[in-house]
Length: 99
Image (cartoon, helix red, strand yellow):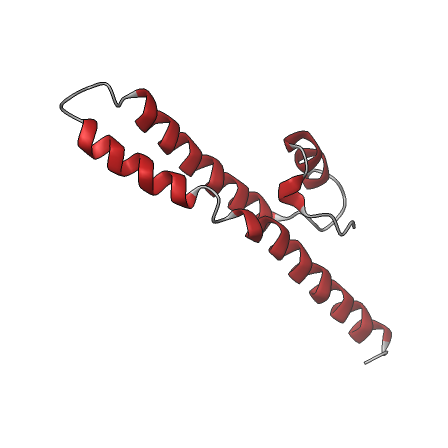
């Protein structure tokens, strides 16, 4: 397990590690990245559709909100891995009788 901050790695590195035998990045990190990507796609869709006058105001609102939340989940990508590492260490210590 590495101590790298996952959201500063390439997508390819993240996907490779997510599919490895290592416990992190796990489901929480993958979910946080998926949430950030989903918000980014909402932002992109609103930008591409802003020329339509009927929907312009609604799409500007969607865009401004999506741009604010697409970065919010990224610290969780790394945070869940740090938490899992601590749980894994605690489990090891308990199993080995070191606690």
